[in-house]
Image 1: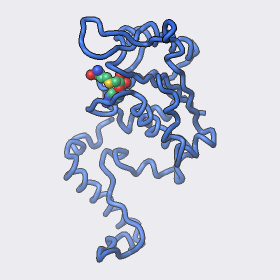
Image 2 (image 1 turned 45 degrees about the horizontal axis):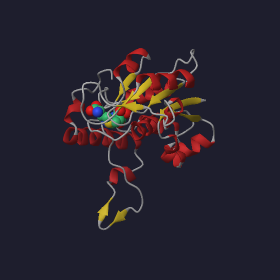
Image 3 (image 1 turned 30 degrees about the vertical axis):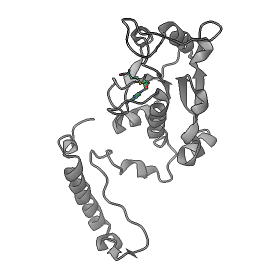
Image 4 (image 1 turned 45 degrees about the vertical axis):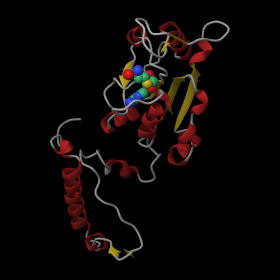
Amino acid sequence: MWRATIFTLFPSMFPGPLGVSLAGDALARNIFEINTYDIRAQGLGRHRAVDDTPAGGGPGMVIRADVLAAALDAGLAAADRRPRLMLSPRGPALTQARARALAAGEGVVLICGRFEGVDERVIEARNLEEISIGDYVLSGGEIAAMVVLDACVRLLPGVMGKEASGFEESFESGLLEYPQFTRPREWEGREIPPVLLSGDHARIKAWREAEALRVTRERRPDLIADVGKPR
Ligand code: SAH
């Protein structure tokens, strides 16, 4: 079973949206599991404090290195070889290729920051790899962790109805996906492109490839430059 362990100050947020639909079914079928570890369990003193003011001054609070390290040490076996990803806007952005690599492994450890982030020393000392979900700032790592998990879980064997459907999508080929249509054949005067109703699989494939290229050129020309390069 693919295992996710989440270090968070808000364990009740999980599985959250991962408890329904595709991911929820996979969870119920034990294709993967989510365990949470409440960082506050290692908090200090009567108030179980986990954060303190930033050294050097400035706004907000920083999660303490000793508290987060104690949580990681208590919550993970020494032999645990899963990647330890710290959600952070400073990390390289998650890609489809990374999601696929993570899904192919035994699971992932996700560490969710809050406030202004975490003390730099614990990132180094516990070998945490920073990963971002995009160039904007969230209030905490939990939703970002769900994004990473959702991207991975749908790629696990047996999760998607048709095994192949993961491979034809946006980014898998380096291109965005071609337009999709379904019944009715005509809607508000708009027709489904006739080639898709022709039954000619070679022509359909060619049309889809051309459309994927057109859409990508229009919307994400930066991706075209990367087609064929290892990602
Ligand atoms: N002061 C920090 C931002 C802290 S936001 C900075 O400027 O870099 C609080 C927490 O939300 C972070 O510790 C991180 O865990 C999470 N977070 C915010 N934006 C994120 C993003 N784009 N990707 C992944 N995690 C993010």
